[in-house]
Amino acid sequence: MNTKELFDEFLNYLRYERHFSPHTAKCYSADLKQYAEFLDSSESAVGQDHQPVQGAANDGSTAVMTAATGSSVLQAPPDAIRRFLGFLHEQDYSKSTTARKLATLRSFYKFCMRRGYLNESPVASIRTPKLEKRLPKFLTIEQIQKLLDTPDVTTLLGARDRAMLETVYSTGIRVSELVDLNIEDVDFEGECLRIRGKGKRERITPISPTALAAIRRYLDMRNADSRVQTFDQQALYVNKHGQRLSTRSVRRKLDKYLLEAGLDPSISPHTLRHSFATHMLNNGADLRSVQQLLGHQSLSTTQIYTHVTTQHMKTVYDDSHPRA
Image 1: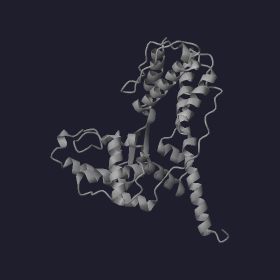
Image 2: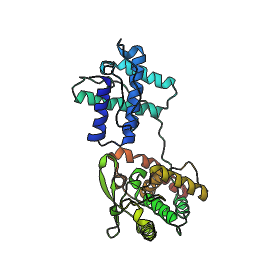
Image 3: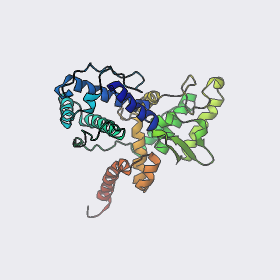
Image 4: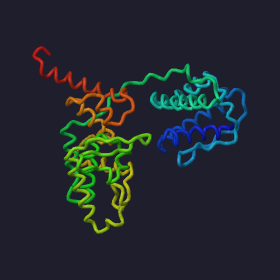
């Protein structure tokens, strides 16, 4: 099996069996491409003489490689991995990026072992670089309200944007999940939302009456528009041409409202998700419930918010306790 076939098999496994998104598969493809090129151009290639590895496919679904054999990848010793990590360090890659690339290799070699191509992973003895703990940024309740009040709800696009912001803050939904919503996913009577998350996992999450009212106002204005028959009839949130919104469009809209509201321009749509989780925990929600609402598979992913809420409790203690 040559390198192209080996990488393609792995990436297809990610896409069609693990249900990874095209964007995630593209990242894995780029990491593998860089790793294969490093092996091919260094002494770590176990003395094999291979042709250079070409770039990844434009759609990110598979890595397009030349006819080089896959033996250098399968025969790479742990020292080759260490040399690769050293190369990344010399190229000034951040610790988080290096850790992600190493995670790609762990996943790839684990796949190779499951398929019987390897008996032992060369990454098994390699330790992941220790990362600095970065607490998630979040907005205060007052800042959230200021942001939500910014869109002009007398216009169709303004009503749409207010509904989107309300939806994200009310449910903690990811932006990729937001743009994937269909009208039928909104249950006005049950006050809940059906969300299709990572790996095609669906979850049902509550949504506030305020957010539902904003969505209903937007849909009423949309249905009253003379062009409504030309709009995407499934998508909940559409652009000015009536087509499903992209994640990039949501980011641009948020940038616009941050500027108008005088808020930190570095805030991202994910900050609203962080704000949702932080405010829930600060107001007494348990960690397991927040995990389910966010759609996290592992509780450890959600636990980063406990650092934020602990700091909040310390502030409350310092402000309130007579001996503080």
